[in-house]
Length: 200
Image (cartoon, rainbow, N blue to C red; front, side, top):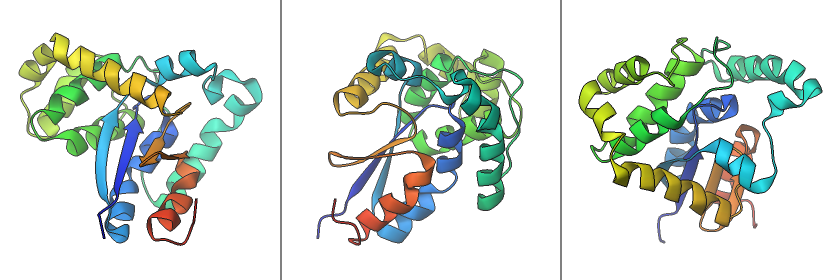
């Protein structure tokens, strides 16, 4: 049987993406699936699809962090509301693309989201991105320089365009082939699909 691949489209600006990032590796390991981390610009996805972040809807925004805290407690992971929110994630995402060229896609993604949602670092800033790079064993200055290279910028744009073309409208978005699963709370459905318990 061919091993299935889960493509995880992520942006550190999304609290639910952070939550999902703490669970997805164990989930795919249990299911015997391969995991591919794909950084994309959630703001551009919103623009392309007419969607908007939950915090932009007053009633949702009021409830958002309570819900995030409940999920963090459920998972047993740390979470703290960032001082800077919403986040301009372009630099962090370009750094993630660059980190992937050094074989650190998963490590950088997890570290960047933890830095923002647990440790209080503003990963829109170069010094914070350099700190995340160091955590995963990369040279911060070199990685920041790489974020300004056109191939890195182009790859982030391509990831974002690809997600929209395939039907993404928010984050986290997971694809198994062309089957889309959206949201931290859909992880249970994703796992059931991977394990053959869900038909569609």
